[in-house]
Image 1: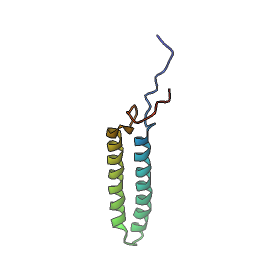
Image 2: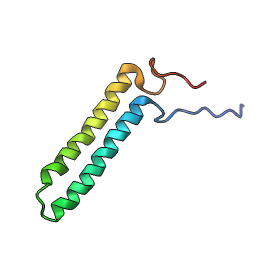
Image 3: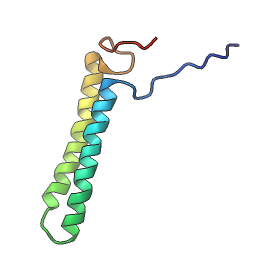
Image 4: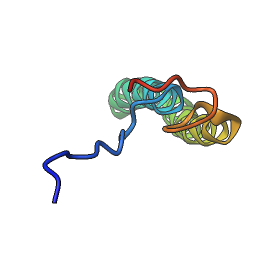
Length: 80
């Protein structure tokens, strides 16, 4: 047996970082929009738009992974 632990590289790729940043922006916008909509300021459309942006983030991350920017992808430089 070996003492070496293999790091699976969870999320340490351009595809993962891009997807997470887009989704964090979506959650931030959605949180504020939901808060303002609860105050009666008529921003319900922005809540739904942020939900759409969340889905866009998921699709962008998936597309970047298919393009080779995911963990172990052809366009990602290995750290080892």
